[in-house]
Image 1 (cartoon, rainbow, N blue to C red):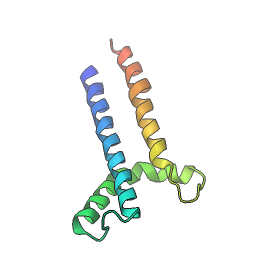
Image 2: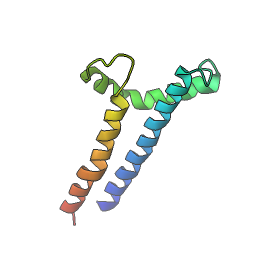
Image 3: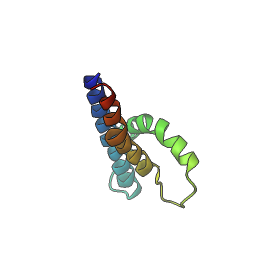
Amino acid sequence: MIELLGFISYLIDLYVYIILASVILSWLMAFGVVNPYNRFVGALAQALGAVTEPLLRPIRNALPDFGGIDFSPLVLLLGCFFVQSVVLPNIAKLFV
């Protein structure tokens, strides 16, 4: 069971990197550094959005409107770090 929790922690790490890549790509597209009409950039943005949007959309709906600033990735990252540092170690203690 401990190995499974380690694997879940690894998946959360991977998802954190995907969230960060999605945020950075959206900034690069918003500031005109990369061309959003490029096929590769568009496909990458669509793939990252498909992976991150199912968890970001409910957070966006729950948060108030902050104008042009989107705090939902920050809330999701905090949730991932909470699960990794609090929830998974406490579940691991139950099986040791």
